[in-house]
Image (cartoon, rainbow, N blue to C red):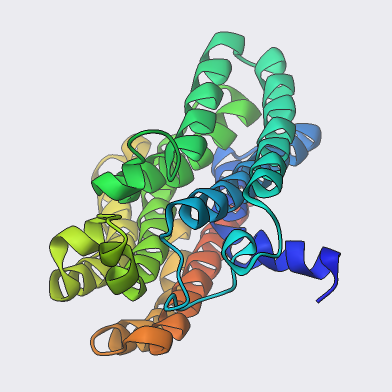
Length: 299
């Protein structure tokens, strides 16, 4: 592959939806679009996602987590396509671009709040696999993904649009957050053997194969159950629930059936379609939620 193609693979483009979809959903939940803020939020999301991916690549490569036994897309550091320093530099560049866009959003809305949340997001990105005690190896990766790729990304986008967080945004944040965690869990189930051998004790390693697979299924099912629960709350308490148009998200359920069934027994490379399928469920559910919430503004 050429240099550009190598780096493109290295940033793991298939994962970008985990950061971009919450921005779209959060904007729809806000019910109002300020277009330059929407663009800036996309830059923040993409920059942080790319930064996390590259930092994880560099740190895991340096610590020997990625070996020839690893299953999945090639990593820049492990394959020797780029030095750890170059990959970390690219990660910092991506995060720096995200920070600049975040500063613009902060100046336009609530400087102190946005800057604090943004700083925490940057620290979380760098400490996922880096630092003296990476939290991915403490079994906390799933919690942080739910917080930053669910609650913060979705509700934060709604906030920078209308400077408040509607109830719809909270419910949708939980849905996309659970599915983002499911993507991570599918990845970590696949890597249990290599992570465990390298001393990287992810939640999947700590739970063991069987319970980690059940957690994955619970996350996917829980995301769709959250849509239903949000609507039921809306029926009795409209100001606190998810409007009926949010039920559009349930139309993505058929896409979840195949990865759920495969996750029961698939191993090694056979878990890659589970990972890809879960990412598709995340994207489809988010797009349908956004569509439903957008339609809610027209009726």
